[in-house]
Length: 454
Image (cartoon, rainbow, N blue to C red):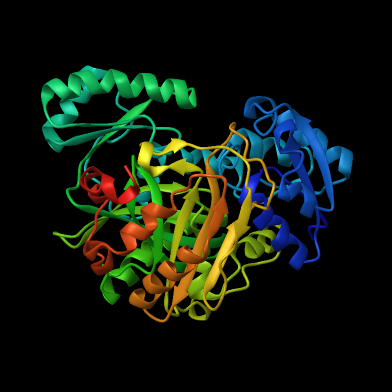
């Protein structure tokens, strides 16, 4: 039912959406800031519309500019990608109010699951285990101190809105807590326009495991889980599927809980339910739901053979969920690494510039999602992600070996990238064994600066 799609994003995800739409016979319209006039997504779309200057607030975050672009080009639908306005309930509402199809959940669902407190409450109602912590938003530091009686230290103070690791502080003592609480409040307010906070007990040596769901507002299925425990400053850098940490029984329980939550909130589209897994206790806890397609979705596509973006478009166009749970099976193992324009030898400093040469890896089980081409100038105004390298193998060991081969084939001349980080990680015995947790990489980076060229 979708005929012409406005892709309200940029970079590799815009390219990814355009390709999926074209496979379905859907016409595409790209939007771009002045800095992205020569971007690959602009070149690949059927039409392109300039929407403003480089600053995101005046272009990719401008709801009026995006709606005008859709109206001027006769679009009947909008895909927000990830980041920018992807989890903005007002944008979803505005698209719908303009008579267009929003490729994603309703504004109400985004509001419910985008606020971490209300999402936590919804999860608890659906019978999904949640991390011990505050029952809702914590109104002031005095109320927060009362929550400490239940959680103890260490405790995590988290922004109720937003994501990306911002508005989060960990306190190991009362003195640290008294300092961290107002800092988290100020950061949350500055980043998300909402200073609301809640608190959770810190789970030691936790793994970050998330379940991919697809739903049509009535029915829902899962596409199994991904593990994203290798993180720097709470930002994922290496993702894989499936997780080697889960037993078959626990995997079934975890994935069933994600489906139960999606059904409970009448979710529609692709979404990800995120958990912390406590290795020592063999228990998982809900932390949040991302109401959009995720950066790491290709590893799920690799192990299941499902085009998640195409399914989003079908569902948004009015088709019922095509897949039954019995149709979804895991084949092999997949890994994704994020190649960013950053210099690992200089504390990952941003490194925008011009792509002088480009060699893209290939061969069996190798996928390279990017917006790069020789001569492309990487602008300094946006996220540093250049490309996602995805590999698939029959086993985890084979996938890591294939990752090393593909990384060595990859050449992005003229820029510093995070490639040295992944070559070093792929050679590390703990990574090879899968013996990592969400804080493992921070310690590894302190001990292995020399391996990154420092």
